[in-house]
Image (tube, rainbow, N blue to C red; front, side):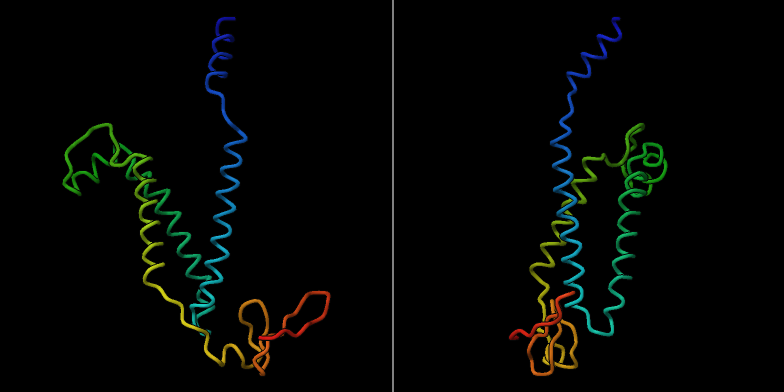
Length: 168
């Protein structure tokens, strides 16, 4: 009876806010999905027509490299034995048996700062070129949300409702 009472007391002391965690992760994943769609669309405006097919390849390689660095990289830097036998001698760091080279908090802080730094760098130094006239008006090519006609007007196709012409 004492063990059951102790377990019940521990459960009430460590109450877990399921609704708060659910709301946090829903918001986090919603923002990540929005960013993914926005970056894919931005890549289409930045890449030339002949390189647009390489965008998904770069995206896939970048995602896999990121997964590898964040999971395997963290585990290799956080493991006490690997840190003591490999990383500290390699980097000339003093011996600290039983302690990894980085902690989870330090790793997340570092990667967060790298992300903010790269985002700021891109926001300041990357400018978008205006679409060329032949991309906007020629050959009925797609651009933005619709199809452009030869007269420079956008032809928007709406599924199941036919098409409508709008000014462009």
